[in-house]
Amino acid sequence: MPWRLKEVIPEALKRAGGKERLKRGLVLAAWREVVGRELAQITEPVALEGGVLLVQVPDPVVAHQLTYSRLALLRRYEERFPGMVKEIRFQVGSEAPRPRKEAEAPSSGPGPEAGRKALELAQKAPPEMREAVARAALALFGRQRGSPCPICQTPSETHPCPTCRRLLEAPWVRKEAERLKRGRASALEGEALLVARHLAREALLREMQDLYPEALRDEALRPLLQDLARRFQALFPEEPLPEGIRSLLQRS
Image 1 (cartoon, rainbow, N blue to C red):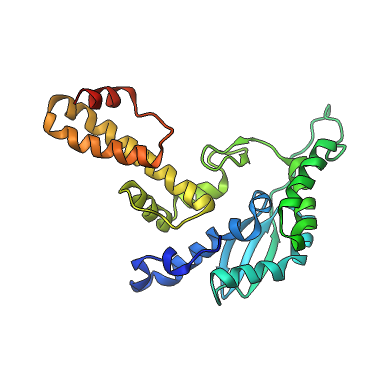
Image 2 (tube, one colour):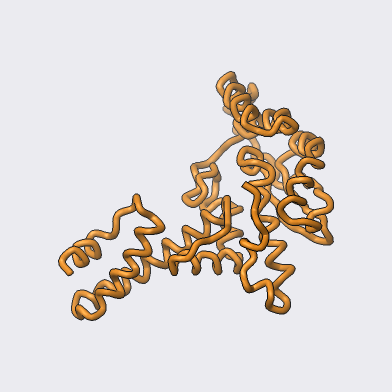
């Protein structure tokens, strides 16, 4: 669903010096929505300067395929952020392939199962991008390494994954996490929303755990603990409260 810019950008847009920086951050965060989840797993927007969006890709094959979809991507950005993205350039990442061990057999390329999954993903993509999605998915399944990132579930050899690690330090994501922690809605989507929810969860758990020993001794503090617990359960209804906190609140 397309973003509504007026709903995404809060009052911070009115503050001097922060408007353009916040807009750039929102454009980068929207890449997953614009390009689709499958291609977002193997690409990463790294900068927006002078209307040019720079996207890092794993190899020249993916860059070549995405170039054919460049106009479609620009149209989608124009719908969400009019005038912000005028060009998209694809940059092949500098990470060198790992050397093979002597006993390691040469790769035979993606197998039948990878091909089946790639076709399934391509069918879900817009018609003009199906070929690019299929080729990129084949490359992804043939190269995929690592375990799921604890925040976004994307396979990664480092945790959090590079995208989530960058978003964890972004001031505009942290601000949205504070909104979520206070029980207010956020207009973020994709990895940015997942990271904001992760930050809000960690903050609420930390505050509850800090308050719990005091609330054990002083009943007057239990309504504060109850409020934190209520906000936590509203955000994460399927996750139980820590046992000690739950027991204390049930007795109150």
